[in-house]
Figure 1 (cartoon, one colour):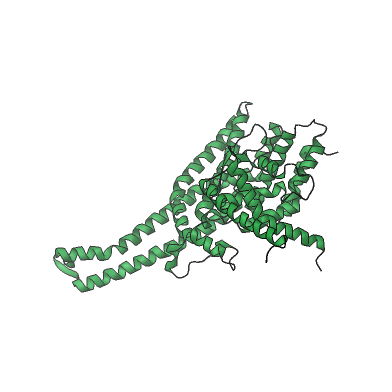
Figure 2 (cartoon, rainbow over the protein chains, first blue to last red):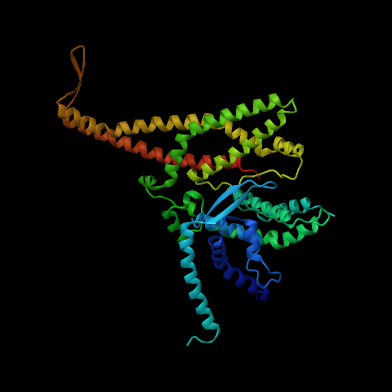
Length: 123
Length: 317
């Protein structure tokens, strides 16, 4: 039998793979200026010291950002920084803004469906 | 007690080890992402020199364990087709459950090659490689000889560093071109040298680094390759197109009433009736189509081979 901890982990992973995309797209669509990975990571993980709220490790957002970029929802620009490697600044594209509206709709539907079921209010 | 720099380096090594088996380009991207993040975080934390090591440990904990992050990259990589594959056709294929790897898509039949973006990409790459090859070669030769010439002077060292850095920069740009046209997955981030090291160390890394010299060799080899690619492409395409145009030529001759005969000092040595001429020209036209289509296959194959070659030289381990 699979240890129960593993099951929890798997559930969290499956659940987060879509929501992280939504969260990152939303952060970048709302931001007035382009953001780079570290800034986004801080926004995602802000105020979460206990594991419960952290949906994603900061390091795991970079592949998601890349994926969103390859789908045309984000665009990026590299800028040199005074110290350290050049930074990659991301911002949402027009397509990304449009997608966010649709995704938000899907999220609302999903949320109300799950809330309904969890509340025993599904009959 | 380890310093902050050492901790970051150890983490990057762990991440590289955890990414074993992943695409080389993914590894380079992942390492660049991690290093950018960790250094930026350390800088923003603005801690005292003595507390830096502890700060880095906390930053790494927030970033995620090497295994976990490596897994995230591997998972997303599957859903992240190379630039060329991001065509509607490739997306449809990627969407179908039985195809995990969009590059495995095939275009069936001899003539299916015309629908394959990789064949067109290979063709364009071969055409522009004369220009890029000439530029790379000139830059590589100028850069190296200038650097060696002025290196004896202290003022020459910054010039040498700039040239050596430019080789890596060009390697990155060529990588983007190769991915866009040939569909070979190449780094989406340029590799960089650790800026916390003193310039003497950085110069040493640049000078002794395999990546610098492999990029240089690639730039040199691109001139002969470019000449070959370009000449082959132009010659064979021109030949094929002229063959394909033969029936049109025959029709013009028939309409103008020019007979298909060759005279030598007044004697007829070769003669074709109009019907024979049309038949022959249609045969030549068919041959032209075969040559053109074969060349498209060849371009796709060259694209694939050149992609592997570029990856071997331009992407460092």
